[in-house]
Amino acid sequence: VLELDTGSFNGRVVVLQDVTEVRELQDRMQETERMAALGRLTAGLTHEINTPLTGISSYAQMLGDITDGDDPRADLIAKLVDQSFRVSRIMANLRQIVRGSRDGPTAVDLTPVVRTAATDAARSIDAEDRLLFRADDGRVMAWGTEGAVELAVANLVRNAFEASPADAMVQVSVGLENDWAEIVVQDQGSGIPKENLDKVFEAFFTTKTDRGGTGLGLAITRDMITQLGGEVRLEAADAVGSRAIIRLASCSSRQTSS
Image 1 (tube, rainbow, N blue to C red):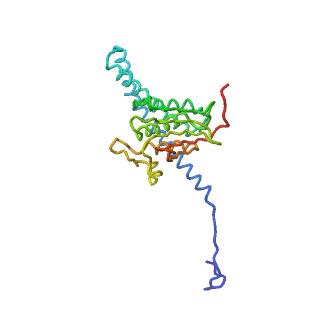
Image 2: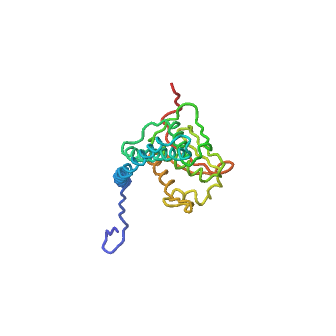
Image 3: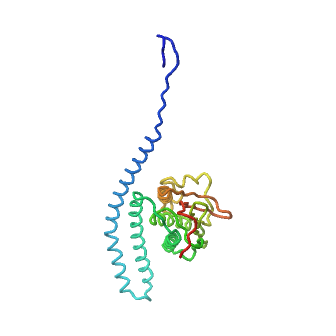
């Protein structure tokens, strides 16, 4: 309050301070601390998990070597080996994501990365014959990390199969849209209620508690893609089901292979 004369009100002195840069610095520091903590946790977990996982994988391969190909158990052993390798790739991807969060995104050719992730995810639930993959001609280059893209696509593909009828196809496509590289995963399920479109990205929100859902898959997916400067959204498909769309900044216009 400004008093030029004792006891009289002559106005106020208002001081404004722009704290935008301070807030941004605080946010960056908090994010750096969070990622550092995540890195320490990931390093510890991967070490603890890889030790028994190496034994499981080795024993499974040894069991496969001594099992005849016409033995009805041979297929189960092959799946055990395949899934142990898949867990190893997941742990390697987690390490790459943590390193990538410090080093920043790099140029990634999305088509082979997305195809591998989608195929592995479908194979893990015996649905490889129900996967339809499409990609634009040429290379679709985007700023990201292979590990983050693989984990994000795998999460979305598994969700799509779980949402779709047992005999329905799931379509995965890769292409360029203006300045964005897009990955689209489309299911043939009953769709997502409008009131849940944003909630599904919240940690621990799930409609699949009866099937072991934890509500972390989409939350982790969005967090990984957001860290890369991209976005993830869900929308209703034109005819039936839903579309999950990952958008990452395109490195340039379409690049064709030499």
